[in-house]
Image 1 (spheres, rainbow, N blue to C red):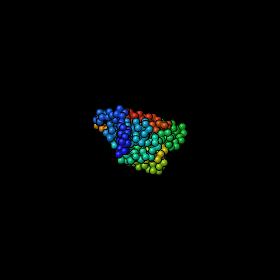
Image 2 (cartoon, rainbow, N blue to C red):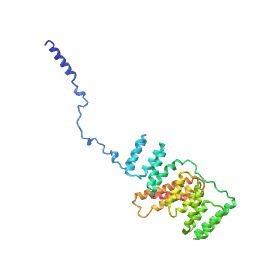
Image 3 (cartoon, rainbow, N blue to C red):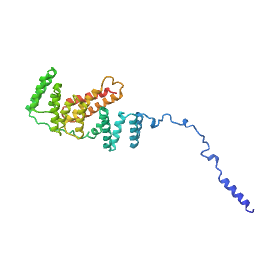
Image 4 (cartoon, one colour):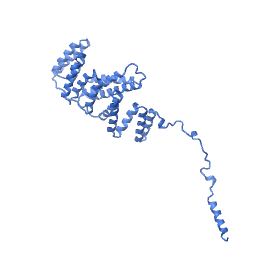
Length: 324
């Protein structure tokens, strides 16, 4: 019992050391709150965002240097709207900037093959390659050497053909073009010959120019003439021929011009009555015209057919300006 007072004293000291200062307690004023009173009403969770909002979110992530997050946001935007124009173009730019050309090329090749009649699918397919080759010289075929006399005579016959065509006399215009072809088989003269020929001659022309292209597979200009005839009856097939040779970079100005030409025509075909309000049709047409513009611009980097190329470029840009 003699130790009992000592035990009591120890207990009293221990209890006093466990006592907290009420005034210094950080939780003193805590009261449970309803989360709704502090929730930011402007915040939208990503799962509820639409494609536009997700693109904005992706752009913010890019500005912050978070490219991985931006890529996820673009993919989420595609789930809301697969053909959203800014989402596709900015996603491609992001991928190319990060050295992922092969990935983005395969991804959009698959998309185009699944949707071969969509102009925007084709545009997003070729866009990365166009970007990659933008600074490279246009691969051309060797020009045929003509004497000044030959050039003068051909120019005279071209003028005769143009005048006769304007007068509605395509038969005689074709005669003038054939005379010019006897001097030199220039691609633009063959193109005039095809354009001036009556529809009943298309089958024979198709066989003739298909054979020419087969005999010279390294000639993009020969391939163009084959595709130019084919486009009268099957524009998508003509596009496929030209695209395949362009991908492996077969040389030839007319090969690139032909891609612009066929894309323009496919865009025109898309603009049927009733397109107003049809978002898919408008986007598809815009895709064809965007591709036509890009290939025409590429053609302008060389001193060939500047007048025809400028006319095609201006037309494509005008049509793009009219579409939503």
